[in-house]
Image (tube, rainbow, N blue to C red; front, side, top):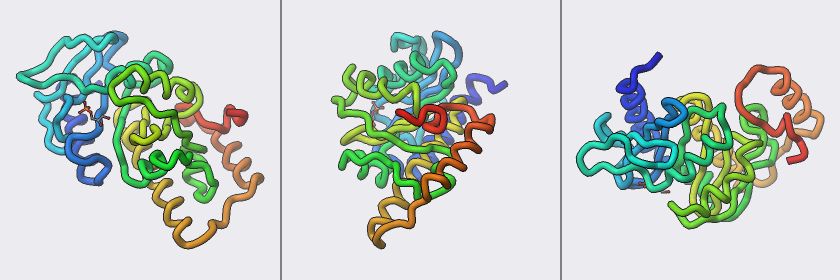
Length: 226
Ligand code: 13P
């Protein structure tokens, strides 16, 4: 099992990846890790995620109250959104919020990621819905994402960015990479013309694989009506 310090180090490493891959600008983005039912580590507000050190990471309780923070570091302003994810999804251990440019372009246009053009995206994500707009840092954001939390492990945030989560920080981060990759391919497909979409049968075959797999998380294969 990772020590708290090792988790903080991993958060810094993920911060570097998010920043180096251009998934955020300046001080944007935030992530958190659940330690237990009432203790969470989170990134500090207003700090570039590409240059964090373990002492930047804050510890909060389930109500967002600071349990530990060094110097002037204060918890991310988006913790209400993160806490809603943990509340609605007891299986989730980590949450990642970023503004990757292709996914955020779809979010700015209010277009969900759903065209079945990549087998891997169909298997890992299925579809990626767009949650309604909420003023950043307010209760409007958790209220907007709540609708999709039981059914998806990734969503776009209208006019804002993307949100992913999973049973570890690495899986939540990888999901963010998958969302951005899918959005980028959909964008490029549009530039070249129309994609050769997978047929309903081909999608259903992939969904069947997903249903039979022990992949954790939620996926449209198990709630096709949503
Ligand atoms: P914080 O610096 O408060 O985490 O906010 C960054 C952000 O991306 C808000 O959506």
